[in-house]
Amino acid sequence: AIATLSFVAELSAHIKLSSSGEKSTKLPNNEAMATEEEEAEALSRHMPWFTWIVRDFSLELESIDGSTLTADEYLEQALRPQRVTEPGSAERNRLRHALRHFFPNRSCRCLVRPVKNESELQQVDTLPASRRR
Image (cartoon, rainbow, N blue to C red; front, side):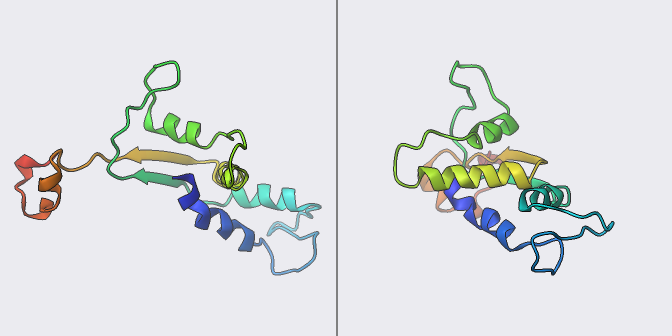
């Protein structure tokens, strides 16, 4: 699921605090910035809340040791860097880093499937509310 968030991470590469092409830019309060890392840090203070909505969620929210996780804890666990073991792992870790870095305020909401029966799912819009979860 992390790979599908690449748009958000790539968006950060195109956002600048000033229109200057110089490496050292100025913030609105005329504070000089020396590095791109500092510019990224300043940008993160202006980013909105990031809310990840997980549709048709069917997993148990449990940690490795079996304790129950909240949806927000699940998101934080998903954003932790993983070992680079297969093609694409490094790119997914880069996306995780960008989301953690640019969105310090984040949350997760998990939505369950509206019905349990697969055949009812095909006609969920015609089912009465009492048959939906």
